[in-house]
Length: 296
Length: 77
Image 1 (cartoon, rainbow over the protein chains, first blue to last red):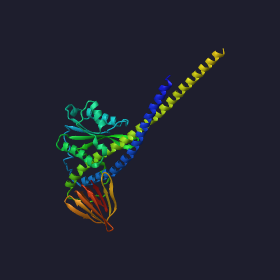
Image 2: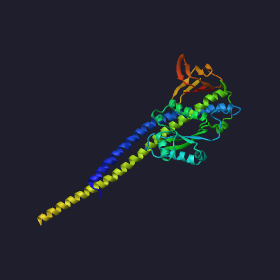
Image 3: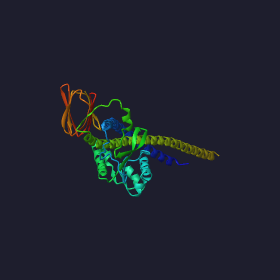
Image 4: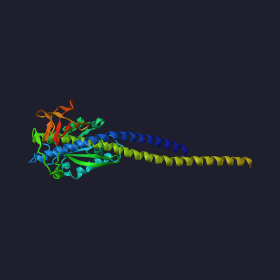
């Protein structure tokens, strides 16, 4: 059995760990609230943008293939991984890394053999995971999460769009965690570029009245203005989603850690008390034994 | 007419208006009540909204606008 002192030291260390995890849980919870508000603001925006897109394309007779919408031969792929900068958030980061690696080995195996798969890592942990698995991220951006806002996201989006326009990449995939609620995240793999036609199912639903929109200046010009916007908004939404999901994941992870520490403390206290009891019994026995010997 | 102005971060205006002036790509234009359905792209500039004699201004860096059924939806940047 461990000595009294050993147990006391362990209790102290578990206690301080518990304090840290419960503080981290509290911090994550308050950050989550803010992140959740942000994601709830962008969702209607993204939805309305998509709706306008659909209104335009449902009014178009031919599918105007713009520079961002045209499919190309998938010679080189860019995978954008969105993870967090810090760990201690359960399987949050590792699931993104795992999915990315499986994408590389299954869907894009041939491009990978030709060395044409690149990684754009947003968030440090994703890059760390890829590096330790033996891949080389092309770009690593960690500053974006310090102060997540739309203007900084535009910079990243434009960088990626430029790579696409320069034909350095033919397809851009986005891997991130979508925020569902504080306890669960859904891993998402989306195609960022070329822009996919998302309106197939929805346009059939609203075949009722077709409004005759006036397009000012012209459909093509509006589409050219609106498509880059949707890309930026899609990326921003992914970042916000991931940010909220990160804090949700961390909150749950830290909650579990605190609970575990509680349980550990309980069992340590029990063994401490047992050891203390045994020591006292021993002492009494010795005293009684000593007294007996003197009397005898 | 009912006007909503949204940015990716916040909703900056929601409410009725008599007149909306917008910075279109090909120049500034105004919307009044019962405007025909319209979709247009916006350039960098100021949005002016008039309600009950009061005027409010919003700066935008670009965006899109959709008008139908007396509802104006502005997705700004």
